[in-house]
Length: 364
Ligand SMILES: *Cc1c(COP(=O)(O)O)cnc(C)c1O
Image 1: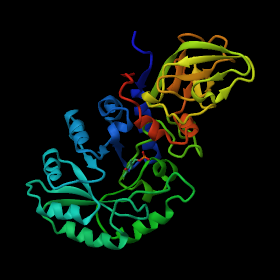
Image 2 (image 1 turned 60 degrees about the horizontal axis):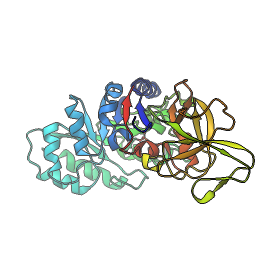
Image 3 (image 1 turned 45 degrees about the vertical axis):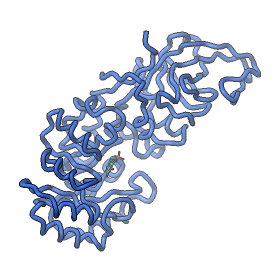
Image 4 (image 1 turned 30 degrees about the horizontal axis):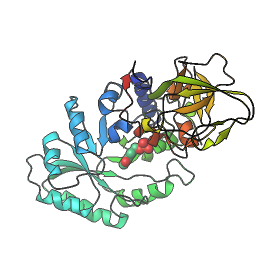
């Protein structure tokens, strides 16, 4: 028997979440963001659930080739554009739309020989200060692109830094709007958080939204709002089983560093999952898991291959019991990936992207 750990990708949940973000921005087209191998889920594995998107957005040219290999003939957008001049050849060959965020990318386009003019997304830095033209340089970039025979359609793009937080998006929206008001072309502004939180605003919906995390069933603004609030379902479950049981007396400790001490008699389930499976080592005592679909907590340190769970209050739990690290248990109970992520001082994005290659993945 293989080690009992397993991840499951829920096709129906992906479909549901996609429909849910569409509902938040009903008249926008939706880029399914599938960068980072579909946030760790696997591009091919999410395909059935996400093929209803209007296009796919990603960063890596090899991932774009994989989406084309699945038979997708619709739009694909390279969110960071090209990294070197010869990437443009692949854009021509596979008909990839690409972001243009700096003058060097315009220089490359100006040198590019193509029969097929490209569709580009001019990216403005409206305050995030990561990629994009400064607002006052955006129009010059637009004019340069507009003059190139290699370019046929110019769309406009920006990215919000605080769509999930208290600062919000109004300040960036104002900058973007002021500079681009009279420019033609489609717009794309919003990630999951902006789409769900501010989708009622037509400017936010724009022509295309770019949801990633929500489609995978994690709340973009947890703990402000949880998945139940947004009506999202987990697209990934990570589950394992109890492979050992220990009985502790008061004063006994658990695991490396003895950093948990029992203050009463306890029963501990040892589960086949550790940081080598992608489970964060920072998830300390108290991090929730589901044992046979019931909430329990981790005690002691996460080690490479094992984690210890307090099953004192679950008399029916024992050898072979199902333990859900995140996602949906067999009895239907849900533990959102956002909970262990928060307990480990991180976000659901990092946990799903960090699923380790040694974990077998099934599609449901
Ligand atoms: C990753 C990414 C997104 C998706 O963000 P989520 O928070 O996962 O919805 C959208 N736009 C750009 C430019 C991105 O890099």
